[in-house]
Length: 405
Image 1 (cartoon, rainbow, N blue to C red):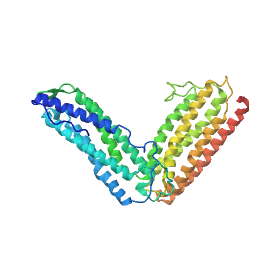
Image 2: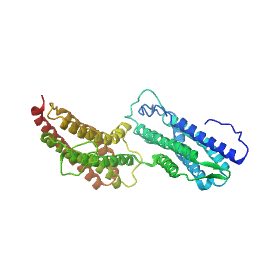
Image 3: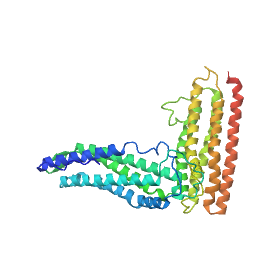
């Protein structure tokens, strides 16, 4: 971090003002330094060269990252927040500000060490490697390292927000001879500190999250989003349904019966997609102390985790497409093939993930009866959703001759 002059004016008042300006500049410099572009990992996170050389040094740095560097970063944020508390600042504020300057320097060095550790743990390379053979690398699987890097990148954004908010908070202070006084809103500063600490703690917990936990958390998020989209979709086709989450802002109820009939056939597909992720999230509850790692490679793990976003995105896009086509239904011909392609894409999104669930996650229950139950359930689910999709596709084909120019 930029080293400012240590020559301070004489007198408590001028010295207090001078230290205040130094601290503000320190936070400004830290925010500028760490809010800039991090690395190309954000742009192309799947470009890591995962060879097995230097594994010992990576393991040492990996352990140090979670045992020392990240906990120290959390403590430094907490210490800054506590030191700048208005009650503390009433006693010897000059010394408090000097201490904050010291912590700023220590924090800057610590983040630099964290960055260096990440460069070894997650090395960058312009050429993309195949991740179909890293199932034995455990914590060094490509997907897990990408998730770790993303978690820290998010934490760093929260930390930079803390720098910015804290700098604004100090600017609002009015230095007096005996300290800082005046009505100052510290709530934003306290909240930003808590958010930064929480995001660091979330990153620290990364090694303790099993791959089943990772998948289950993604599935829970998908369930919440699909619940919202389902309510939105029903409100589009049913005039008696309550307004959806988006209806009051952008959508009106659909009015053309052929489209409404086809749209209603989408509802079972949405419900079945929701059921898949709900069951996947519940699978974790039936696994007592699951192993941290499975035999999935990064490609399989990535496909399974990203299937949640893909299905939600496809169904959300389908809802928008129905609404847009309904608006121009009588003005121009409609090609229903785009609807069938969107629906069939859902099957494509879930084929690989379903196989991974059956091969790698269901056996983690360690109970033959539970394992048989889940295998039967997912098999029945697969049959049911494929039937629903075929029914939709056939209905779209039946409408096609009447509405395609």
